[in-house]
Image 1: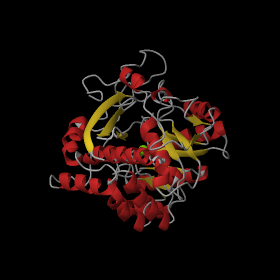
Image 2 (image 1 turned 60 degrees about the vertical axis):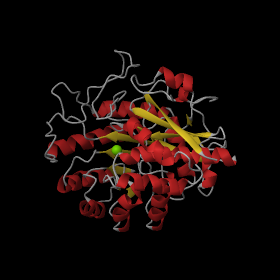
Image 3 (image 1 turned 180 degrees about the vertical axis):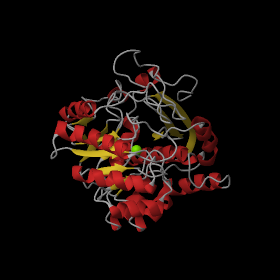
Image 4 (image 1 turned 90 degrees about the vertical axis):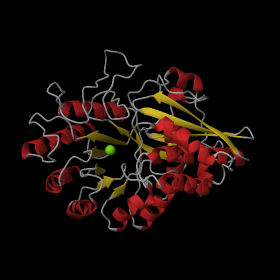
Length: 414
Ligand code: MG
């Protein structure tokens, strides 16, 4: 079997879901999904020359070829791996289809037949939609009214930005708990009534109290027992203020506090993790096993959160998962992808002993489930996804629906 070509498509979800299809001379194809990045489509098509003519089932050696092809330009990490990851995922899908087995079987088989999902609730508002350089945008398919609130700027608080209240967080938590989720995540890096300096990484005590009141709003709405709560700080804090916040959060017994510090802060993460009972999670910005290794071997984090649409692929995720397991650290993959990328993560989570919970980031997206064919009801039921038994990823993209939401100016599997 030989690879004959690579095609791409971009669907405008709440992010640009970038698909890569790898085709072969035997008529079998595989589909992967990449985390968004500027110039991603162009990169994918440039990389196709590296793999065309090779057997798609040689997944690891093709990955090594892609590494060699790009490392000379300096890409030992970074968004080139968003492209390589999508290609690697497509190779697993293709190999599973060629052998007639699900991807989890290729990864060593099941530890569980359904995968626990947590809902990202942002800041309690409705849809968040960001382009490839993190500018908030009005999605082309979203109504101009209703609950599609896109006022949040990722970079700095605008004067007209909404101030969120504990009641808003609580209402959102109740809404998601009714859907059956057993775990939720909320942003804490939101515009504060006490002002925010977007650049100095500092928190005043009043800002810390405000953040704690938001978490209390969630806890008071959904109770302290049945529902696990995580919070995300998006790399915005210094070590001392992160320690103050983590200490204040201890009473809530959170599932985790995510990315309080910049991703390269290995020693600071170690100090923070050791100073608090609040579990510290990080990893969505890290690439490859080598990116995780220094944090894992120093016990500098409590929970590892690789993003399986950019970390380097399913094999890299497995390397990270196995090493984390040997360090007694759970894995909770970051995930903002469509049902295709989510399902690749589901296969990994099902086959990984130290899996904790997988992210779902599209609660307010009206067509998430419609992107799969032959779906009998929603993919996520009562907070879990059942591991599919079909070959490869076990799901098929509904191209008619995908085309309807395709990003203008991008090829659509052409
Ligand atoms: Mg995050």
